[in-house]
Image 1: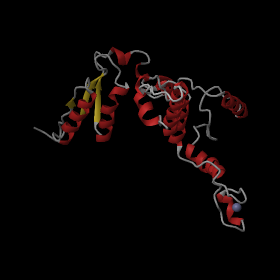
Image 2: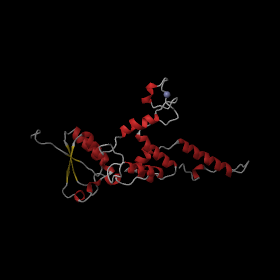
Image 3: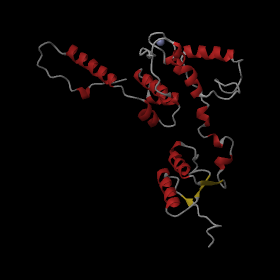
Image 4: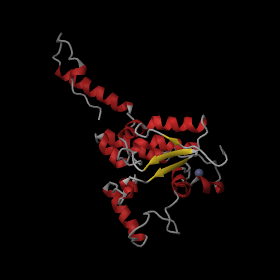
Length: 252
Ligand SMILES: [Zn+2]
């Protein structure tokens, strides 16, 4: 044989995405395979569905070639077949009225463009969020308690910079989204709706990574329950309290 001229590629059972990922890894690491071949669909399903993420992530991690054979795969030669997550990412984003007003005036200020990013740099490309963070957000949040000057401008002052603790602290972009999810959850918005607002492919992501069940919520719920039980209970009654597990309790 000619190992310098022929290489083997794995064929994996994509209908079981996790297993397919394991077999790919085994094929590459143990058997020296150089990639994987697949069809354009998996039993008629788009390979870009979230359930196949585990496979794509492993293939990307291993840095191996994925060869996709288009024969017989009507779903990948039809119009819009590769829309993947794109359709979801183009979905409208719900915003509160105050924000909508500000976005409208921003739109007018930048010359009412018909397409392209809402927040753009001078070259018309999407604004770099880290620039926004360093130039605008952090200077606004890190101000001196004594003179309200931002940290970068503070070297001329006659006293040491001391951060104003009444200003919120920056906790990263991810915290923005997590905070939104948690707040919506506390307002009683259903998980599915929060998922749609955050545009997660899978509601489990929303539930496990974004919604922080605040212990205060649980505490407040138990206090409510306590009040309810106390108000329904005749004074000096020997009657036992109802079993809490039979009561309709919600911590939303
Ligand atoms: Zn100061």
